[in-house]
Length: 184
Image (cartoon, rainbow, N blue to C red; front, side):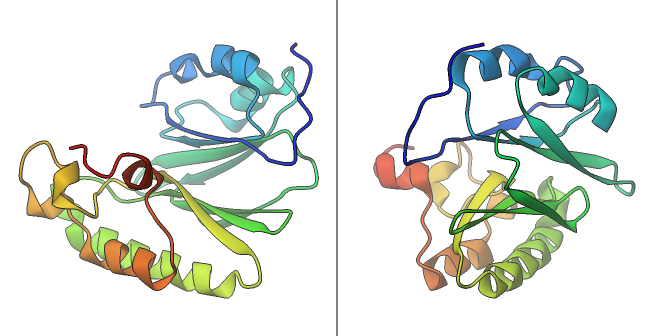
């Protein structure tokens, strides 16, 4: 196992495993990159199987599952002092570490769930507001966009104006958009 680097920063990885039993190559990725935290969506193995797959690499796993609809997300951590809270099983977890509240989310997906996504982000915004004095980070699978330029084909059902407005209200930004403002 590679030696853990010393840094004043911590690294995050988010991955939608698309329900693949092999976790979309996650164990090899963890061995090669050693992120401090990993946020998984669409996990399709049991909590025990996930713990066995990553435990030998030094990670602990906090799994969150909803039964209806069947969804599973998980947080992997190299930090035993990080606190993981299940806010909405299968949809939303909160990790408190140092001065940060990291919200791991897997928003409702599909064109028919526009209203469900808006209600979901309204709930997320309430949790973000309660996170003070911690600095909020939002990671995961949002299943929508906040700008038309992020759509390959026009589809109003994939837009979420509430999320866009919420990000602005809380001075949060889409990291991809900050790094690549003009790309489609």
